[in-house]
Image (cartoon, rainbow, N blue to C red; front, side):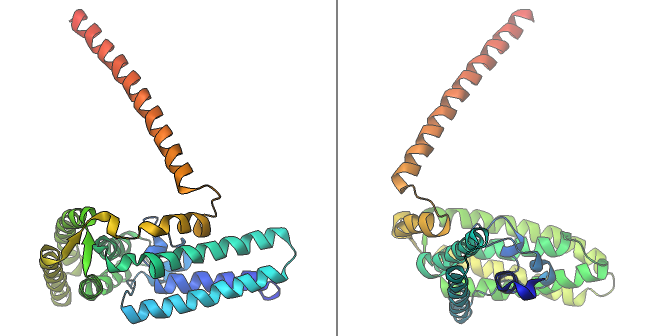
Length: 280
């Protein structure tokens, strides 16, 4: 069917590409700037690659896809297809803003920790043909964790204050999670525990190195990072016609409404408690 519909063929190629190169992020709702892609299920044995040269290749290829979608949109007079193609261009714009303008991968350690341990969790919990496949893909992702965290250390030179605090807490949670799943995996492995034990030891050592890095890294105020990309993200990725100021005002209005409702609810609960005290 897609043979006679180039926009479908191109979109399938695009989703397969991002799923292959960003398999964890495309299988999770945690990363808003990447699409959910069904093909990510074919790569539960891989982690996303954030080497600087790999990022450059991804950016170049995504720009090719964006240009191809734009060309098809200009040639197509079907309104529904044009809308789909514009949405796909906006989808790519979100990834490019993240990689090329915000440079999140150069200051957010949580990005790497999330990829490593959401990826490991997916390998363990997503559907598998059998327990052997599940164990093998978990072992493969576990073995890739030290390399990914090494990329984090190589890529990051400074961290926003709030990200730094959150990263330290997340790292402690990752240690606990690794200890838990490590015990489960060793039980599943039976007699073949040597490769798994080696991978667990290496992953724990990588977390220790990451912790030492976070202790020594330069911490800067949050406003030093990516403050100028919000309006671009709203316009090019979310296709919003509202300004940042408009959206902020709407958020404040909603916040104030929620505070009023919480105050009313708190008053009702307090009155009920006073009534119970009288009864008792």
